[in-house]
Image 1 (spheres, rainbow, N blue to C red):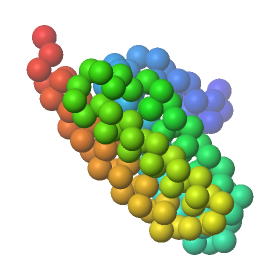
Image 2: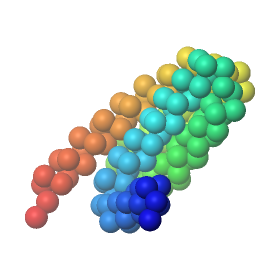
Image 3: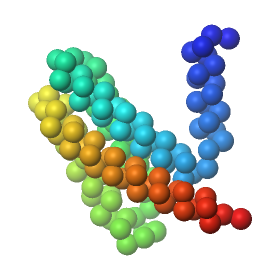
Length: 128
């Protein structure tokens, strides 16, 4: 097996066996990575790579929004609105090549990721 094939299998197995709280953090990790690369690509003048990464980031946020149960907690509707705002910002950043918008979305994504990571750790720590 090649190194890439082993890596793909590891990632696939990790996702297949991860608890939901860990999957959510993994999605945010990938979102932040996409945004970091998009920002760096814009800085280097590589609009094609930046666009691809921003589009993937939008897909992740759309998935987060689609799976959000806004009735599960009082902050749900606000988080849904934030997701919609972030998608709009990424669309505009992609159209205009505005790195500052990408960085702004990245900042929000990092804060959300860190909050979910902390919540996941508390859930795991409180387990049986």
